[in-house]
Image (tube, rainbow, N blue to C red; front, side):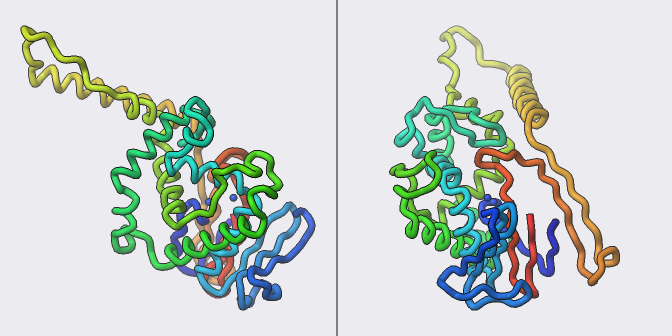
Length: 295
């Protein structure tokens, strides 16, 4: 359930993954009350290991979120940053399996690298970032991403790759500090993941047809149109099948007249899995008087 006091756009990767109650203040500041912003970002863990992050601004909120996300999901996140930077084959071998879309292990590391390297070479993420808001990131998003990178890297620096609790990536050379571009590439990959599974292998293995025989006539306009319709139908069927096998979601919104306190409320149920890079990871983000989101 999320209560919003102001419009806020956080990319999936940022707004994106202990049972004993404890408090962590990033920078050493004492924990503040939930209704008052602390001097520095504060993470308070409650039962079931849920981090409640409170800060006075968006950059501080991102810092706390990045630290908590790395603490709970370092191997999953590092693996995803490896994927969006097209470096899986280099570190994990070309024949290994990965999950660029909604489902698990749908393609090889080599195909994934070819796919994401093309995105990097095209510069699509850079062009999107260069657009003014709201087509590009709003100032709050830029601040949150800046803080997220700082928080993630701080956790890694404090812990060290060799001392990570998760054996899946403990001591791995590919567990490294991240940049803001890593986070934006991750966000872009999540946005397009619905089409990644059914179309990725076809894109990276596509090849032009062989040269026609010298005597073969060129296809007519009608034949070209028929081929185009056939191709479009095949793509549509692949996407439809992926949707049938993939995730779904629903949501319920209540206007201000239906909520005590005079603010609207949104309940979203995204039906995400419990494992892999798209797994659910609950957290609570608060800037007092500005934003209060849990989910």
